[in-house]
Image (cartoon, rainbow, N blue to C red):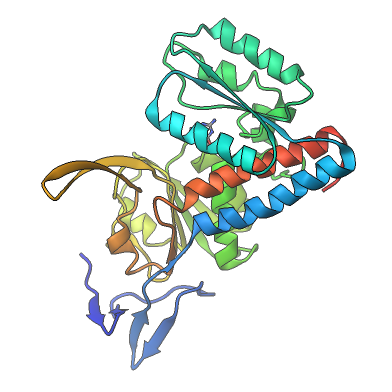
Length: 334
Ligand code: GUN
């Protein structure tokens, strides 16, 4: 149960000692034995991604002017999943804005495994393409693992190929592609806390190959003490209360509550859930994260919104990986 009381815009938390050896951004004020925690700072992923896009666009222009190379990104989508179509369109539009050569292959939902693999063979061999992304999830009849492992590792800007996963797990991020969502999360965490997370506890909710596991590797490399939790974890709220950095990547709308949060913690919400809400007697669809923003923002030190947090950062990191791939293909150092 949340026991805080409002007090001139601050949250009074006499019941919770602050365990930070190094508090992050929020103002934490001690007055006569009481602890006041300012409402969370908003981590604006949209603005940060826009800033990154500017430097990616400059890098792409320079690559073209000095070497005649235009970074090329191919996005493959199979089927008609509405959310996937939106994500793919955003990726393609951003690639165009950054001045990339951008192609989209939209295949029918009933496409055969052979036809998808044949397309990947073509793209792997195409010198104008430096990055290949197959949007997930794929229709059930397709073998997701076989398809993601058929993207050439040197064009695997999603970082899903076992060769890239292996390098990341071994802590060798140089020359490897890091999956875009964890890379974006990490940048936002570093913006708040710096590159060295020594002494800080990071808790990740969700053990997916796309987010949870690779993010754990990145956080470990930055010296955080990392816990990955999942549906079989006992007393999840208690584990989360120990987190200086909490990342929710579970796909359950508003699951993480205010009372799960250590005051001043950094909260990164990876969830993008579509829920139905009633507004003025009408049912509308709304995007919401895995974190109950209203509750958690009163306790956390900093928090990402949904939308406008992790989503735009994922796309920016995809662009960064594609430029890096184009440079690597031409043996140009960063
Ligand atoms: N579906 C949801 N997230 C991702 C992602 O990061 N990459 C791909 N390819 N598909 C996704």
